[in-house]
Length: 223
Image 1 (spheres, rainbow, N blue to C red):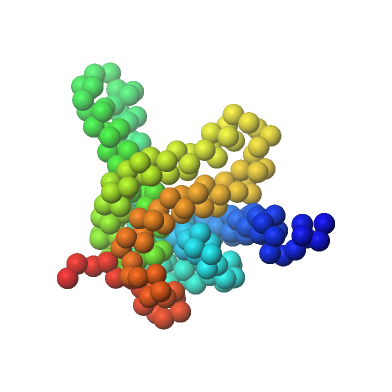
Image 2 (spheres, rainbow, N blue to C red; image 1 turned 30 degrees about the vertical axis):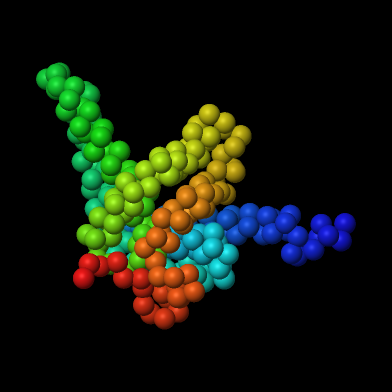
C-alpha cells in the first residue's frame, strides 16, 4: 500500500497528470469564453502541454497566462483570420449544396480539399506559435509545412481533435467527461505527436531555454 501512495509511483504520477489536464482544460475553456481570446487560449494551452510532454511542467496556471499574455496579439490575429476563412468556407458550401444552379462536382471537391488544408494548418498553427517566434504569415506557413512534413501524424491529430465531439454526440453520458477533458486531453495526445517534429527545428536539447524566462523565442525566420 505504501508504494501505491508514494508520490513517485506510476499511479500517483498518472493521477497528477489527469488533475493537471483537468485544470488546464477548465482554464482554457474559461479563457475561450470571450471568443476573441480563443487563439491566445489555445496557444497558451499548447505551450503548457508541450512542457508536460517533455516533463518540464511547472505551475500550470502561471505558465498558461505567461504564454497567453506574450502571444495574445499574434494569436488573436491568427484566430481572426481562421474565423474569417471558416465563415467563407461555410458560406461557399451552403451556396454549392443548396443552390439550384448545379455547380460542377470538381468545384465541390476543391472547396472540401481547401477546407482540409485549412484544418491541417489549424492543427499546427497554435502549437507552432507557442514554441517558435515568427511573424503571423510565416507562422501560418510553417504550420502548413510541418503538417505536410509529418502528414501521417497530422491525420492522427485531425482525428484525435474530433474524438471528443464524436463521443459527446454518440454517448450523452460522457458529456461531463468531455467538458472536463475535451480540449486538453486530445491536445496532449497531439503534443506527443508533434513534439518530435518540433525538435527537428529546435537547437540541441540542452540549449533550449524557456522563451518566457529569457524573453527570447526560437527564431524560425529565414536568413
